[in-house]
Image (cartoon, rainbow, N blue to C red; front, side, top):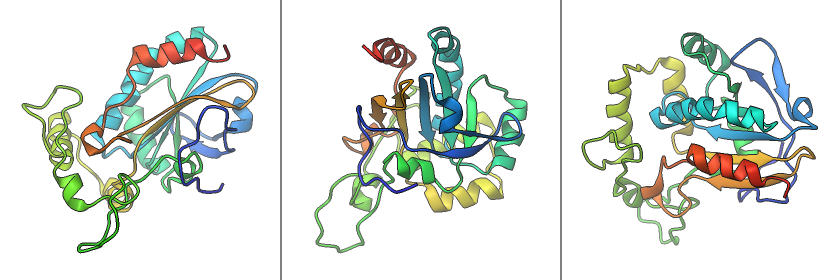
Length: 226
């Protein structure tokens, strides 16, 4: 797989992949999904409470998409052993794939924020060349669970505590390596062509952790192939 410098758009071909599954033993590839449309979401690891919530939302919309003939796939930036342990206690109908190296995220062009060095004279271009000050100034409360909009890292800490989710060594390693990975959703038609794409926070860090709603996903799926 090759890295895309910008997110893939409708009309682009979906890159091939083959990833280990967290729901059961084995792997799932693009070839396994060929011939039928599917929704695929690329997420941060389990350390991200907002990503965990989005996977739960996808589980809620999965029956509607399945009835419309679409598969629902989530790629999480977590080692397969850790993901299998977590989802053994929180089963989901969503097909869960594990990519601890974010290779498929990069192949689909899902950005990861890159920060300019302190004192750099380079021009800030979120998320490809942001300043740390720009990120630190962000305030988010996308699910309405926080008492007020908070800095993203603080929001993560509070929600993980609320969920009683403790990061293990695998989670901490993924966080250290891929903390700035963004999230992307793509609808792929039966021919392997992207028909819809939505990327997290392309307009700035205040939009972090705002993901498509169930209604938006269903509406996009309904227009696929028209």
